[in-house]
Amino acid sequence: MSDQPFARSTPRDHRIDLIRGVALTMIFINHVPGNMFERVTSRNFGFSDAAEAFVLLAGISAALAYGRGFSDGVVWRAALRPWGRAWSLYQVHLMLSLAVLALVAGLMRFGGNPALMLGDNFDALLRDPLGVFVGLPLMLHQFGYVNILPLYVLLLLATPAALWLGIRRPMGLLAGSVGLWLLAGTARVNLTTYPGLNGWFLNPLSWQLIFVVGLLIGLRLKAGQRLVPVHPKLVALAAGYLGVSLVWVSVPQVAHGGRALLGALADLGVPRLFVQFDKGYVELPRLLHVLSLAYLASAWPALRTAATAPGLRLLAVMGRQALPVFAFGTMLSFVARILRLMLDEAGYPAGLTLDASIILGGIALQIGLALLCEAAKSRKPQESPLPDAMPATGATLAPPGTIRPIPPKTAAAMRALPRARQDHPQPA
Image (tube, rainbow, N blue to C red; front, side, top):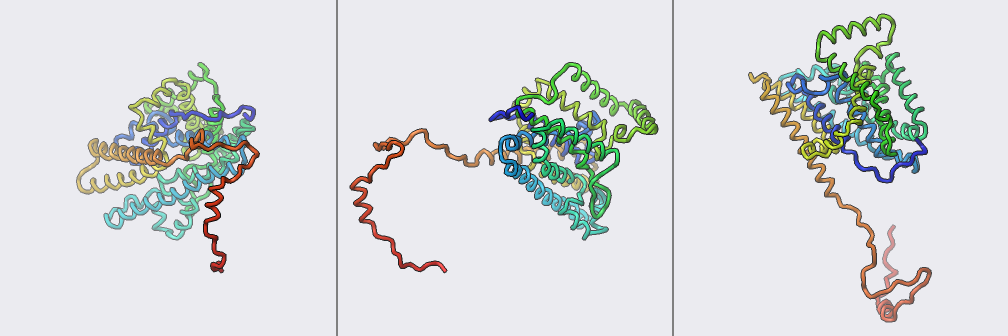
């Protein structure tokens, strides 16, 4: 990799924006449990869901944004950019956690409904409030549906080392990443939480593999190459795996038989990492699913055309403004959950009309925010370039290395200026 120069200017890959926008909408839908639109999100058509795709895209984007500095720049200076981004994500995570906590506590305090406070790790606040306020700023206590940004923070903190190694020893980076994934999954190694001791919901030691694969993809894109070439047999293999996973999740009899087979393998001593579907450890069926999806998407020429289609522009705008849209969407998902609970208590149970109003309205608000962010970004003043030529004033430039004498009229005017006073008080 190190002998492949990066292009000075890499055109923006609009496929990343489009897929990230689609992933954001699916994350929002899935964060409102029980709504009817959940049936059409990606997790109903395979083993992985939008979270895996989002982390893979984060790795690709990190390589595209920060990779050059680790190839031909000062490494410590290049590291400041991903670390600065990690600091921004940490701040957003804290504000988002406090905001959703206020929403959930408000429902219990003023609405008399403790439903949300009794789940998603909010109940720890009732048992050990001091422990929660210790764990929250350390990212050791994470509320449900507000637990992906801490993962990103840690991944971005490790990004400088990963990029430096990925540019010089890409296969070494991949081997180390796979080894860490194997260790975490087979030995069930996870980062601790506090005050509860349950481990992170999205184990960074496992999820780093998806991010690292994304980094390697992004580095190759930066060099105008592919990480894995397009080959008919690989395309058929990936498509076949996606087809099997689709049938698995769609046909209960197939799922029952498949789980029985995997259970038999587990009884024979095969580690659960290879035969289970745990999201926290990104176990093998989920990992293969997201990698197969990514490979087919990258090999599909129509996706590049679709990414710039006018009808999909709004999704691409959402993808370009991923952080504010994600944070806003997370808050909206809690508002939606509270609204559904309150309407249900008032005798208006959820149905297609209510769910459509809540979900489509929430997506529309997120699109509106993305458009506002896009407009604000485009209005930022750009640095003015130097003029190509000096304005024509009748003056001529002296040749390099010569000093022109001051014209007599200018010298006389300068002598007529009052001399600066030297007796003004000096600062203490």
